[in-house]
Figure 1 (cartoon, rainbow, N blue to C red):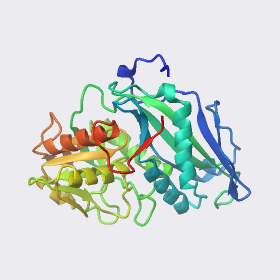
Figure 2: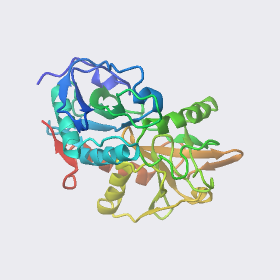
Figure 3: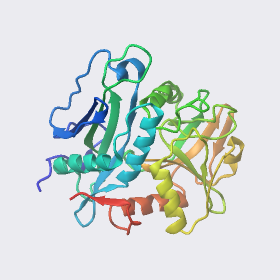
Figure 4: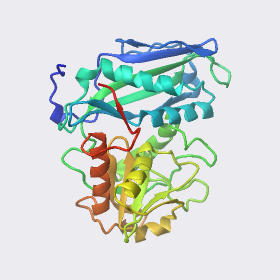
Amino acid sequence: MEKKDLDWGNLGFGYMTTDYRFVANYKDGKWEKGELITDPNVTINECAGILQYCQEIFEGLKAYTTKDGDIVCFRPDMNAERMYDSAKRLEMPPFPKEEFVNAIVETVKANAAWVPPYGSGATLYIRPYMFASGPVIGVKPADEYQFRVFCTPVGPYFKGGIKPLTLCVSQFDRAAPRGTGHIKAGLNYAMSLHAHSVAHANGFDENMFLDPATRTYVEETGGANFLFVTKDGEIVTPKSDSILPSITRRSLIYVAEHYLGLKVSHRPVKFEEIKDFAECGLCGTAAVISPVGRVVNGDEVITFPSGMEEPGEITKKLLDTLTGIQQGRIEAPEGWIKKIL
């Protein structure tokens, strides 16, 4: 298959219109059979539920070209399950999990020429999303919905190598107690935008959000989970009902235990503990792990022993192992890799 004529090695992390996207509509109490279309534009009523009351959920995953030349996806069944749970929380009709995976496969196959070649450092980012398309003026769930999948080739999240980030402890809350922080809804990300802008304006790369009830425990950033490493090599990930269940984080925990032989704890983490950790990273689809070198909380500055120049030793091993699995250099656990072509 002939690939698109792109400078794959110099792609940024941004949107580029590809040839096909998948669309399915929910009407009269059921999901209609979806199809691939070429039009990238969405046409909806001015009173659509997404515009009035923000009924929208989404996912993010990637397709890769392996070293053997196959095109694969990483754990799409997990994205299907998380979107199913998100839909139930926002009173939206869940899109069937098997059909979700089929939609991913169809969309990637149709856009196979846009999947970056192995070794280019680029990947095909896939965005499934669902929104209320039916008109609704009273405060209630809509009657009609649309599920869509588009994809776009992207370069590495960090250009010029991975450098440790500097975070600030945000004075804002990302989610409410017993709210929607544990689902992947657009409204949660809208909540974080102002805090993100304030952090950037003050010279920080990202926020560290604390728990909204007591502001005692570490939660996550606006779009990634935390992963800490103790000085004796134990992996610790924060536990909370308002943290999004990251697929990348759960995969890294498995890698740490079963590939690297490390001890793992998933528990509440007090902010006052973090000064005692050796390494810190942010887990997410875009960069897998983004190393954190420093956290600032007002006048308090915490610099991790791993430093501000390179990722910590264990963070680097986790990154290399998981990306090796995704790209076919390392044998994957059963069911983690979905072959598409």
